[in-house]
Amino acid sequence: MNPRDSHPVSLPIDLTIQILARLPTKSLLRFRSVCKLWREVLSQKQFVDLHFALSSRTRGVAIESPDHAASTPDLVCVDPILGVSAFSLDFLDDRVKIRASCNGLLCCSSVRSRGVYYVCNPMTREFRVLPRTRERPFTRSEPEYEATLVGLGFDPATWRIHVAIAGFHRSFGRWPRGGDRRLVCKVFDAATGAWTRFAASMCDEFTCMNRNQSVYAGCSMNWLTHCCRYVSVLDLENMLWGKITLPDEVLATQQGTRFYLLELEGSVSVVQMSRFWMSTWVLKDRAKEEWALVDRVNLRCIDGYAASVFPISQTKDVVFMATQKKILMHDRNSRVWKEVYGVEGNFTYPLWFSAFAFGSTLFPCRQAIFHMHSVRRARRSFFLLAHKSAGRRESHLRSSYKKRGVSWLPTSYFLLHLHVLIVFLFLALEKFYSLFFSC
Image 1 (spheres, rainbow, N blue to C red):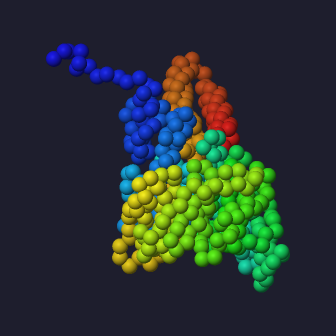
Image 2 (cartoon, one colour):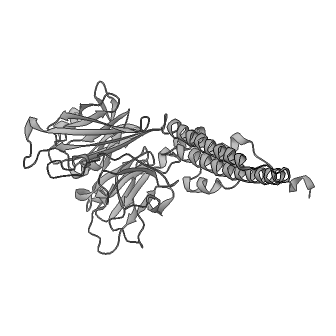
């Protein structure tokens, strides 16, 4: 045996990055503890973006557990490659309900504290607490109109987070109808760290299923209305509502069909379902309102579920459908149906109300968390070092002044003022870091 063969061969760093970028997110989180180099590489924005680009085709479904018992997981993720895995949202230290998802991040609302929202990554267990939507308590004259529509947007290019909540406002004892209805909206921008409130007149209705299926595309939030004739669009840059009309082919065949709004490779997609067919349309040009038919699936293979199946998530290769107790996956290349998840026992809550499109990513939702911890650790270390140095210096001066018969009290006052100055210095440094990394 050649002794040279016993030495390990180190791969080039570029090749190592390409290999790591193709691994699951759960494995990458464990590999952070391998060495300092890997931890630094896996935390860089270039690697996180590369991993997202390579794993965007393997998005699946996240199912929220309806009962919050200690024996059941808070979140069940169904991946087309890795299968079923369970996660917990216990790091939020609150009882929450998932309201929206986008690019591996979840927007959750607190069940105990109304008006409190979280943005979290269940894989990395990072989270961000958003400012309260309102400080005054909810009353009968001002109901919780914010909870009607909830949307989450995360731009993979800029890592910018948007959260939009909207709902119809009504006065005490009166439900406005027709053109008198006022939709109150609030948009949170991570760049400013605050909510922006505005109102608009709108006559549309939204079903429970339409509320759960919000799509973020092109710096806008999209919801399908109850009439299923157009898509309501919230422009996050200009804070304006707009409409996108559905294709003429869809409007002509509305009788006896159902419509759902999904995301497909960063674009808005509408899924039309009839008794025997499922058609998928994608918005190609937003300005011209041009749609294209990209897929048409025969539902005769699942004839027993066709009337009660709902599309939840889709990619270019697969589409996930939810029934009351099962999650089905359809391979668009092989045209094969497969049951990937099922609930046993007396489970009566439909899965389509608790299932969201989800794909595991490494995207952070609070960039300043590591910097703030570093500042606090450095401040504690510096305080300990300064205290030890000051103690040794004071002991030396005390013995020196005692020999000469001079009081050392002024020196103690000088050290006290020095400690106060150091405290204010690090408080100012911590405030600078919190403002600089808040976005």
